[in-house]
Structures are given as C-alpha cells and as structure tokens.
Amino acid sequence: SLFRIENHSPFQLYYSQDGILANPTSSEREFSKSCDVINPGGRTSYSLDVPWRQGKYEDRSPASHQDLLLVRCALAPLGTREGAESTKVICFDRVGEVIRLSPSKLSTTLGSFVAAELLGVRVLGLVATDGPTRVLRFILMQKEVTPTSVIGNAMRETIYPVPSFISTESSSIPQDEQSRHERVLTAASETSRLLNTGRILNEFAATREAFFGIGGCKSSGQYEQRKCSYGVGDEFSCKLVFSGFIFSIIDSSPSELAVLS
Image (cartoon, rainbow, N blue to C red; front, side):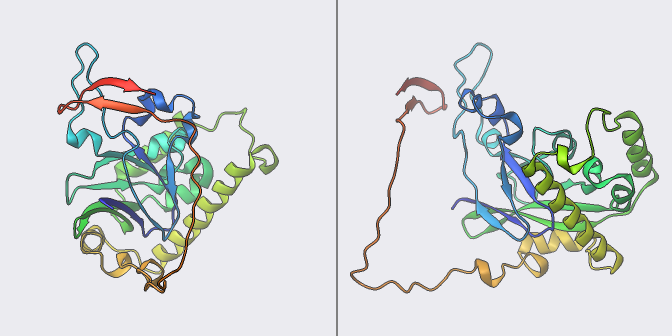
C-alpha cells in the first residue's frame, strides 16, 4: 500500500482523514464513531475515504494534494471530549513531520492522579518511509515536565470538571465504552510501569527509532510476510455484495464535474 500506520505504543489510536466529517457521505454516521482505530502493536494500511474534495462552490478552491493527506489522530474517539483534547493533525506528504499525543489528556477516564503521573509521557507519531510506502509510526517517548504543563493540567481539571450528570458507575456506561475505559486503564498501567523502570526513550531516541523502524519500532514476526504455500490448482472464492455504484467525473484540478449513481 502507499500509506501505512503502525502503533508501537500501549494505547489505542483513533484516526480519520482530516475534513472527512464535513463530507456529505459521512452524514449518516454517528460523529463519535466516524473514525478508525488501531490497537496496540498493530499496523494497518491507510487509504483516503475521500480521495478528492470538490471546489465547485463559491470562494472554495479544490483541496491540494497535501490537504487530502492530512490525518487526524487521537487517543480517544474523535467525537468525544477526550478525543477532541488529544487530537493532533499530521500530513503523510511530509517525511519527518511529528506529532505528540498526550495520555494525560485522558483525565476523565484515568482520573487526575494517574493523569498527573503521565504528564511527562507522549505518544510520538512520525512520518517515515519504507520503500515506496509512507509510514506513520507511533511510539512512547518521555519529556521533561515543565511547570506550565502542571499548571495547565490543574487548570483543565478545575475549569472542565466531569459534569455531574455523568455517572462513574460502570453499570451506566455502555458496554463498548466500558471496554474502551478498561483498555485505557491497562495502557496507562503499562506506561506507568515502563516509566518507573526507565524504559521509555527520550524524544531524540524515540524519533530515531520511529524514523528508521528500529528498536521498539521494528516489525515483529507477526507482521512479516508469510511465505506463500499455495499450490498450482488451488481454488479460492469470495462473495461481494454491493448496494449500488457511484461514479464521479472530475477534471485535473481536481474539481467534481458530475456524479452518476
């Protein structure tokens, strides 16, 4: 594939093409679920949900190549408060560009004490290359905790407390959300253990490993391409179900000229 995302951190990562939520084709989906997720230790191919963005409206120019390759990344579903606070945008077109996602922004799930403990931890995302493929790798890194970070975290808890109508009892939380909370707590526990044992790299070392795909970012055996064991004459079948087809006619801008369905 042309693009790939690898998650070498303990946290789940949520991502979506930037601007996709404003596209009419996404209007039927719930805002909080209009993103994809990659689990810890996983990697997945990435493609554009909207490979063009028309500019036929007044005062609106077609999206550039770089605009289409912007990706929103977060540590929680993009439509939630934690997702909005932890969201960063990165471009697949810029090799070497980095973003830093803050686990301490998940304070609603983690609690103020655990969030404060993770103030010096970031999930570093960096765009690198693997042959013709652009790869966005995520890995834990450690940074110095500044007084500004401590004050900002305390102010966030003071200004934006958990609303009183949100119950903390597990019975009132939807099953999928409760499962996500458990995974976040597990990731925080693992991160805390790595932090206390000095096994989280500083930013320079983490950037180097993410860029070259070495150390903690080296693909494990489960990702290596399996040797083909198919024989001559083997038969395979698949079933495809389509609800309809849409054809879009665009010019070189690209600007949408017509849509056939």
